[in-house]
Image (cartoon, rainbow, N blue to C red; front, side):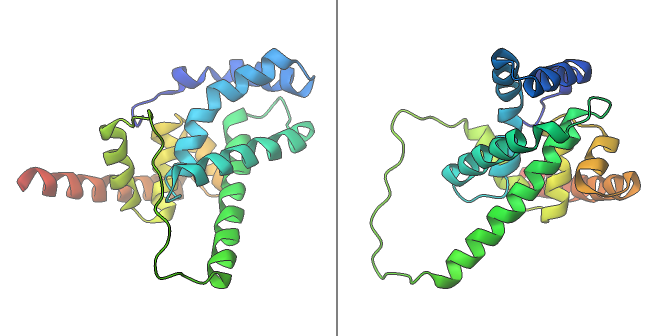
Length: 189
């Protein structure tokens, strides 16, 4: 999934058109926008969640927030930073919720076994990429997922994270360096 470019998600004007249709209540526009952006958003959430189910819950919550805030979207602005800004706050709220829940939960000595989903096969390369990305610091991982998985521009990532373009470049550069070292280390073993 890490090689996906913006053409897979859709052109910027195409996304704006879909978002305008969404604001107008056009069912097909809504479905198409959700279909195009959900894989990238799921990857964004999955990078921080331990379990796929948590990432799917965050994705659903994000779309609910997008729906509630759709009237605030301005067609003169790009769609991806607006939606990923909502996704970022959804992820942060999910993290806070999980932390609160962990403080109140009591661990049992013998938890029940979990059952893996039958018939669901994950691409081993995707799992390996997720594993490598999880080794990055959170801020660098966030930038890499937005840039490389979602195909956002530096300016769009800066807007979505309330950062400067220079800061995004610096985080991306540091992440690339760390990823390069990790991958070279694997090749040498």
